[in-house]
Image 1 (cartoon, one colour):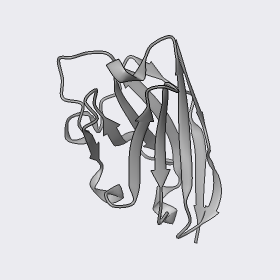
Image 2 (cartoon, one colour):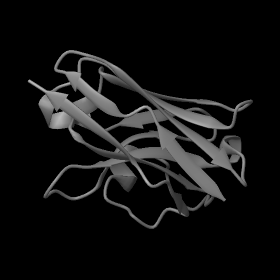
Image 3 (cartoon, one colour):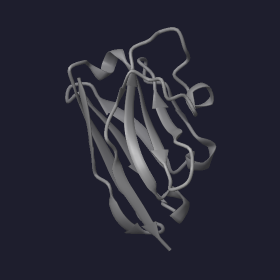
Length: 128
């Protein structure tokens, strides 16, 4: 099983980035999929989640700016990030869990680190 993120980089405030996460060894359609981020000196936190049925949820601070989606045919998870601000600077991680005993929602999993699989992360830097 592997999750490989890409698409990070450095952009100015107000810009956009699209992160991708290619999954192998399992199918994203059957998993709760998520993006987490960790800024320097801060806890890792869940930013966006997408459930098996396509239901999405977001951290309040990114609502209206970030969009999580998945392409089941490509077995890939995406995070479209618009109107970026310096506070979005962090390493972004893709995560997945096959459990059915929890709600795949930002409100439930924001600080939950026990998901089954994690990528190694991609760095996003936003300058003012």
